[in-house]
Image: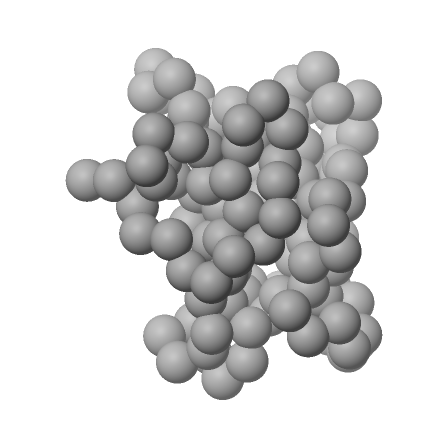
Length: 118
């Protein structure tokens, strides 16, 4: 993934008592992993393009591992039976190169676009 840092305007999301400044042109992705109608995890991109996430017991916002950078969050979903966050790098949400990270006891790597389970 491209690791260039580019500034952008910031907006704020607050959940579980933790505030985070994200890129205003890209709202956070909310995940309901257990499908009970409540948010379990939130993903957002900082103005410097770093990808962060938070959850109820996180004690704040945490940078996603493996140094990913992105321009847009696409969605949090299940892919191949694993929790997945998909982001886009480059020319907008629909035209950028999509990258995904999967959760398997921890968030692992960034890979070219995974497809979400339906």
